[in-house]
Image (cartoon, rainbow, N blue to C red; front, side):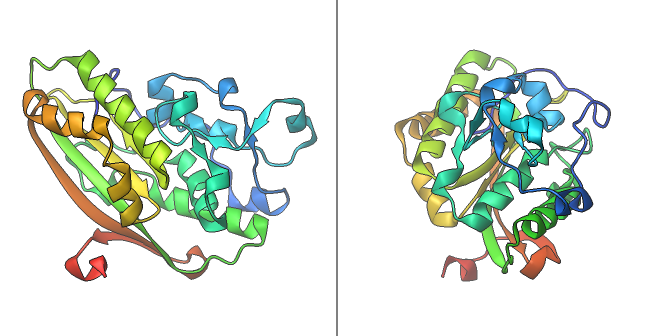
Length: 254
């Protein structure tokens, strides 16, 4: 999964206001508005954290709108692309909700260091607030991260690229354990970044075994001048005090 859709946009203005841990202490943990009430615009979902507008915070007026357990966890807002929170344990549900506010904070994310390209600290501050709101004791946990850096061929078939990515994402969602998928927009040199955050490495392996993933791998030579895959681990410490994203090593295979 490493597509190209839309045009580059700037960062900052226009993003939903991020809920703060202080706000969450006085309200219930968020449930979800139905995804049909949220935009399907790629740029809003990629660059302005529009998926976070699904979150509810226990206010009386929120119950008047349709509710759901299906979370927008990628730039695709469609029925087969949604993450079913009922399939996750408490900690993974909380992280998936926190990741709705993930967005890039610099225009050169395609080539910049991964941990400097997104609003990670804001995400984990929000996660800490969610755990406090739900009375959940977060214990140290590890997640599996895949990073795709690519440069498209000048003559790439964008519709084919989109289809391969979209159907591959549906396969990954159906397989289970994909907490977040994000992709950007190609820069002037046709470079881009995409990333997946999985519940575990095993989930990632299973999620990549379907026929659309096989087709996407087979088409890579025709679509990309180059593409690199990096695997990393996301460690979130007890009570979300600290976090780190570091290389996945052979020792982590155990």
